[in-house]
Length: 243
Image (cartoon, rainbow, N blue to C red; front, side, top):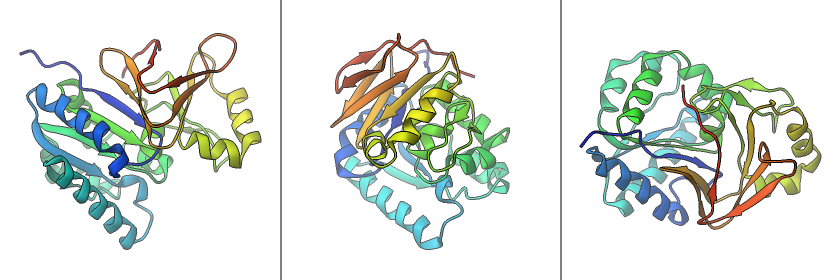
């Protein structure tokens, strides 16, 4: 078998929870079908500036999910930029079925990973069949631009998917800060898709982009002249490029 690029998931919220078990199992199994191991890797970098207790929270939550999935779990404590040059972490990424970035601060994820050997390793594994997922901050960091939800300015992302900008927790944020959401749509880069992804919901790219989960994905900009909403099972025709 000639390995192909792995599945990619942009997740609105809910990483490692039981309501996301089916989606995470599917991502892992897709990696295994590409010849990868039954290994579920957690990357908690988004919480790297938070407390030790918070990092342990993510470790424990992921371990419980991995047990549900009957998978080997590997928690990589990549919390600083120095860690992204650590050969031990780089080697542990080899041949995993799923690599998963959990939530926190998307700008900090970019600060830690941008132009590092670890990020190059992740991209190489993804391009050879490993599934790659980002939840909330993780999903935001995969684009070239991180739209400002809590902060008004736009930050740079990792640029894996340069033409997509993500607003996670969309159903929650729309109720909390509708004016901020409207302003993000106005200043979102021309030529990019602006996506609102609801909680406990993912947009997954395999052969096509498809919605999975309990709620919806909203294409706020980039498909025609008005926003469009898609539910679980719907395909979304997004022109896609990778770097």
